[in-house]
Length: 102
Image 1 (cartoon, one colour):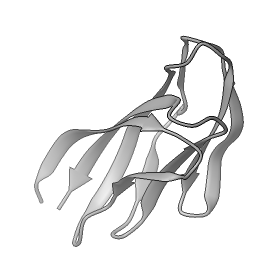
Image 2 (cartoon, one colour):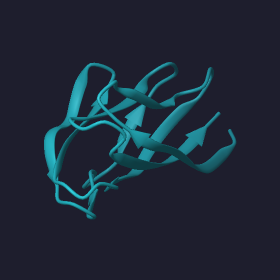
Image 3 (spheres, one colour):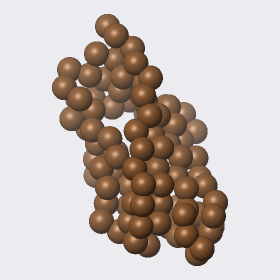
Image 4 (cartoon, helix red, strand yellow):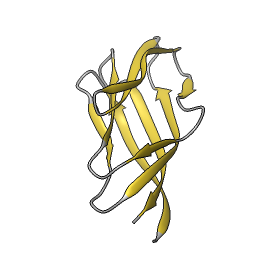
């Protein structure tokens, strides 16, 4: 089994729900970090979901600040997704760090 550390990024996430990561075929992934940055001059609220299950819901991020979403690790299986949504258009930059095992 190959182990590969990777970062997945998405800029200017807004109200539409952006799929930041989908686990590739024949792969198990360990999410080891998820950082959200507010790129606006106003406070925002952000949701992060594993599929349809919330990891955080309505997490407030003050203007120009950032939030690290995870305290521990989350295991993902083939085809599972991480989706980020903000309450404000084009307001959030995301960095998702994973260890992929294939």
